[in-house]
Length: 148
Image (cartoon, rainbow, N blue to C red; front, side, top):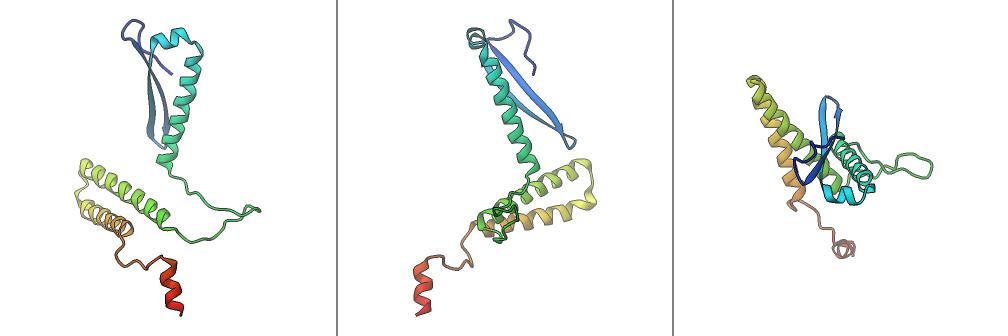
């Protein structure tokens, strides 16, 4: 945690940073100096909040899978829900977009068409999952009428 030189501003700026997988993750917080002087315990509260925010940013970057388990700890196989499929496709599209930008900046022109094609395919999948084209009706009355 760092703070700026005293007297520079009316606010104290706190920063919490960590390197994760070669990438720096940082959280910032700006707090009124008057609050810190009036309530010394506020500094501890700000530090806890910053660490929590940093942890949330790290988890977003790592994007670990969340699995449903039964009471014995075994994974429950429920297939992939539409929301989960959309989340995964969106994450993939974002990652491929970042990769295409990084390849372009690095001058790796031979790989750009493939990166753009992969990105476009992921974006098309996201659009398909967000829309209702080709989706079967989910209204239970529809299926009840079909059984008769």
